[in-house]
Image 1: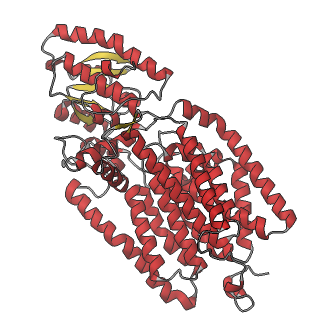
Image 2 (image 1 turned 90 degrees about the vertical axis):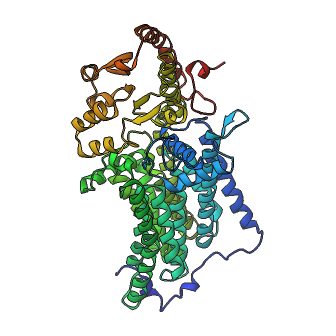
Image 3 (image 1 turned 135 degrees about the vertical axis):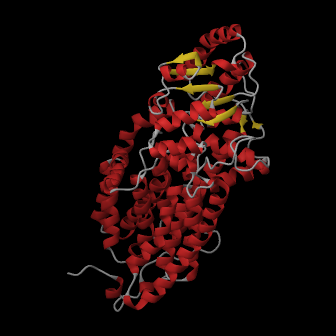
Length: 578
């Protein structure tokens, strides 16, 4: 029997004859249930996020520092006096932070003991969560009768997923990226349902959403292929011309403003990609790259993945509005999953780049499962419900240990970096009378927000020459730049930041640096010729030997120890809890 297609059934069954939930007007019982589900799901996700306390990952604070500079009229620089470098990869998220600072909501004050540097990005995370569930409600309301069940499923699924929760409330751009991906799916699904896929409105809107996604994360540009991808699935000979015109419209809506942005980027930064992309030495995609998705699916749990695929497949086999609209969700899901697979492995835990994947997957499975419950045979409904619920419980059980570990020791808190590199090196500079010094260190966010020194980035995110050296795998050029051109007053190294660039003890010593504090094979270094009084050097070493271990011990005991408003001039003695 040939596979079902819309063309084959139209003579027998009109599309408008399919059972479809009526659109509600005004405040009805259904809309109240949907609203309650949206609010409950948002509360569940926010409550799970609140268990991370005031944690903000240090990388987010790099964008905070740029927002501060832009709002203060300094331009896109990491600090006053620094040259323009695109050391961020999230200009749309940066714009929201600049707006918050301009409105006095960010980087200004403390509310009830919580700095707005923590509160504002977390509130944005809650608002994006609310937006995601509202979009889910709007799509589900067009496809199934019990749309509240889809919203509640998404809320519970996402609240139970620490990967989603952690990065929605990390201070990074993940909330905006996930929201844009779900909005893209909502527009595509509704356009398919209304048979308006080739209309100008959906074409332009999806192009603009893809543009915003590309300006939120570089890999967000993959969503520019979502609309053409869905068009290819629905194209027919009779609609070939309309489909081509619509695709051109969508591509133009994305490409024209994005090309203008690239022109601005090249004019300001002399690069066509963010400096961060070069520093991370992102490899060109290969077929082997997609193996990275396996670890993500393993984290979700293969039972849950299989159950979700089976339920979604059953929905695609059954004629009706869900079958017609579901490709609008599945194509963006496939694209974001593929983008996750080709990105270089991330050193941060909990699958930082997968946030839109979780949101889109929950939407697809939630719709398919609810459709099965409403229109499937009784036995099929029971089997589908029991299978999916069991799979989710097994998945959550498998994630519990990793979620608890992350909650207890979240990735590189900004407060730790602010104290360890901002405050400690401020103390070094004060004790050694080095007011106009420079600091080369690999952990940047909290350092930029608090340091009195001119900061240079050993990771290369905000240092173009170092980024180029990482991209070329040329560590000799990197060391030459550090020791000959930069000649920083202070250097900090640890772990891979010793071995990868080759900043070993012997090389640092030969370049004229003396160690203030030992940390494994690395530690804190000062350029010997910058220190006028050897007695100051000895006293500073003694202070570091006493105070730095106390700081490290505090953060080992409580890695998410809160800190106050982060400003230049933070000192370690003032950073101690009362």
